[in-house]
Length: 325
Image 1 (cartoon, rainbow, N blue to C red):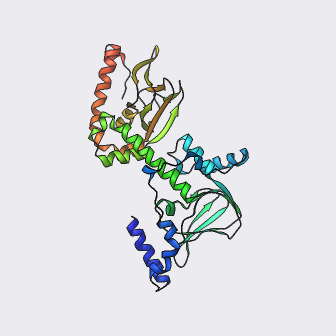
Image 2: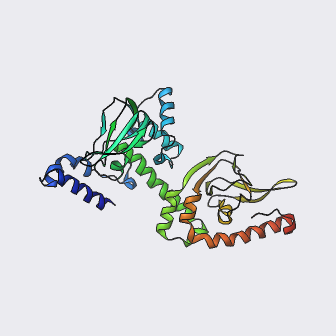
Image 3: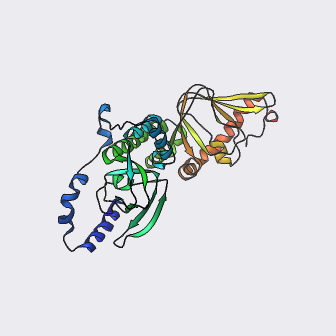
């Protein structure tokens, strides 16, 4: 991907001038492209983090602005607080250029208010309008490449920005830690032994951390299935509803998983799940489940028979069991 991007920018810049590409941009880009970041060897001093003080009102506005940003979806609460601390407010006037195509990436931006237009190419063709929500500027920072588009404010507005180094350290380091943590978790799940290493890495990247307090219901019997869960920490009680009330059929701990039955059978949830104590799980949504766990489908289908066997042992016969499928 990076090679194709460089070819694109090479053609674009050569059209602008016959001057050799390396001479025109070597000095201007040196600081960015010489800069490397290795999350595995980052022994960052916690006290060195960028922190911009905010009033309660500012922090509330920022929280509202970032709540639907997909880039932050996999961050846990501590990491999200670090993101909020590191962002600073930028007041924008109509016609201001926020970023310009071909420039070095400096900041990542989240929109609080205002309308912003994106343009690309020598003729600055309009390709998108951000209307009071969204974010931009992450690609140049993630992939260490020049800005791929120009963003100009159409109206006055407010942005929240994060500098390149902080953005890469928080996002890349958290992604690295998340992958390592989840790879270790997934290695402990027998069902996933059939996956290749790259398949497990993709699965680790797709997992979303969620936490539940003691007594919380994680899934409800009869509901439509939206995904499955892998237990990182804590205990989960699996219960089914009978005439006399809910009956526990299983108790799961770290390395266990649940919620896959409804995804395999395309039926409503067959049981409810409750947090026995404080529980941390890794959630895999239904789209990622279907895309990434194909190689494990036969094992999960075989497990359906195991569930029925468990229930017969508890209730004595199938006649005493509601249809779990």
